[in-house]
Amino acid sequence: MSLPSATVRPPAFPANWASRIGWIGLALYTLYATSILNLTWARFVTGLDNGAKFLARMFPPNFAPDKLDLIATGMLESIQIAILATFFGVLLSLPLGLAAARNLAPGWLSWSARGLIAVFRSFHPVIVSILFVKAVGFGALAGILALIVSSMGFVSKLFAEVVEEMSPKQVEAVRATGANFWNVLIFAVMPQVMARFVGLSVYQLDSNLRNSTMVGIVGGGGIGAPLFTAYQRFDYDVVLTILLCIIGLILMTEMVSNRIRRIFQ
Image (cartoon, rainbow, N blue to C red; front, side, top):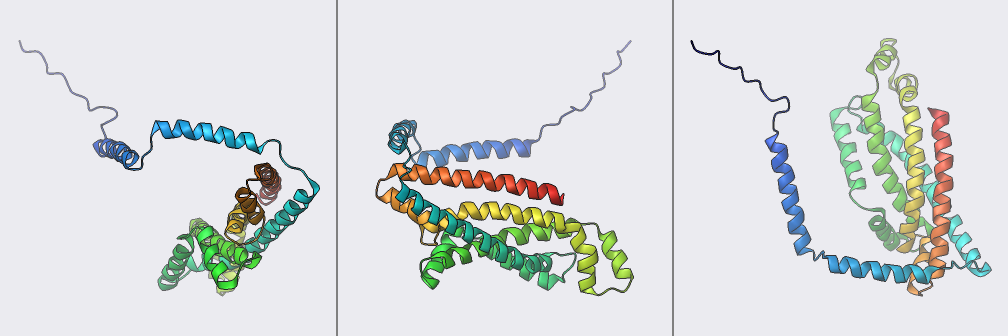
């Protein structure tokens, strides 16, 4: 008498060969890139030793009154640059984000706005700041203009995605009353997305405070200029003092931004 054949069950987790090949390819490319970029363990160890010597020269920080006055002036200018750039950047991002939303704007307008946003997002704020320094000269104006462009690239893109993810029922209900486009925006769109828009704006303020330091290094005003000068003069104790002030400013801003997000949640 023949025995019944055993049924073969398919594996619970079938092998994903496409994923495996992808991970193997990524590992091989990582090894290849490491070899051509001269990334060696000896250089890393030497860098740790040089970094330790550099940090040792930074202590103790320099809290001399003349240095603190210079740092306070630069920090105040950085704060002003970040606030102005955030205000005008967010103000311009609102119509640009609405124009990029595919559920509100016609196709030609949506793709045009998305192309403009892609251009804004293509370059780092430092590169944009160099362009504006060449255009308007050294100072805070170049930094503000560079951060406005950066803010529009970030806030507009995310705001357009927020608008596209909103519930269409409220929009349809307002349109059914015969309301025009502006009334639809005010009574159907903005109540759904305003909390997220405020959160994006506050996050962009945090980002602009950090970026205001970098744009200052290339002549965009703010604390970046004294920081770069201190590096060039080997005043590493002053560098540490500036870095501590920047960290303290970012921590304070983070606490304020978290409180603002809770209010609008």
